Amino acid sequence: MKVVSNLEKISQEIQAACLRASRNPDEIKIIAVTKYVSTERAIEAIEAGITNLGENRDEGLLEKWKVIGDRPSWHYIGTLQSRKVKNIIDIVDYIHSLDRMSLAEEINKRANQPIKCFVQVNVSGEQTKHGLSPNEVLPFIENLKEFPHIIIDGLMTMAPNTDDDKIIRQCFQTLKLLQVQIGEKNWEHAPCKELSMGMSNDFKIAIEVGATMVRIGTALVGEKEEVQE
Ligand SMILES: *Cc1c(COP(=O)(O)O)cnc(C)c1O
Image 1 (tube, rainbow, N blue to C red):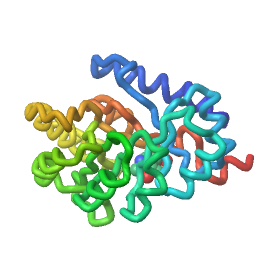
Image 2 (tube, protein in one colour; image 1 turned 30 degrees about the horizontal axis):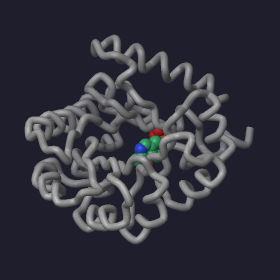
Image 3 (tube, rainbow, N blue to C red; image 1 turned 90 degrees about the vertical axis):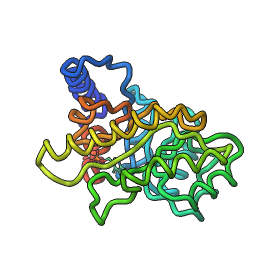
Image 4 (cartoon, rainbow, N blue to C red; image 1 turned 180 degrees about the vertical axis):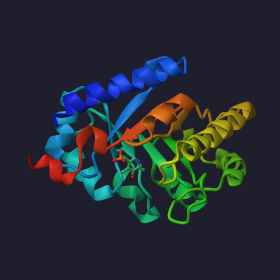
């Protein structure tokens, strides 16, 4: 499938979800997750109207950025090893996977200007998922105020791998609740206006619960095999 056709379908689904939740579709940013696909396919996404690209490895990000440049906003969405921060820090506009103090220290040290970060939260508690547990999030963010190069722009989570919509919805609701609690603190370094949640299989639920950034890979640009069509 062409990215334009996928994007059209996804945009319609986003509009329908917004209607159900009485939200304005303009509040939702689509991040095209291009980690599975080629640079050509990422360019096709941009030509279809995508303005945000997400990658989960420094190699993939650099490879595409070298060709595409700064035209889209670049989102780093994967687990980030501290030693890799220096490779991506001058390219990325957003880091969605801040999950520990040592990483915050490294970002703060390497960045030349404030970087918009999302605190990754492991709501479901699944062993395989990264992120802070919900009760660690507020104290963690409070401690980040000493870092001038870190702005907490929002929270990020990945829903558990399940077909049970109720469990997925609860996960997203927990993230929303945390965002409200952080907002009440009025921390200058943590406006926390964004919620990065929802992927190909669950973005509609995420939008109903309040997502402002959905990270969509498979449903938008496809998986590796499809590109060779
Ligand atoms: C791969 C990935 C996505 C996109 O997943 P799809 O199911 O292909 O839409 C979103 N977020 C993160 C953190 C990812 O690693």
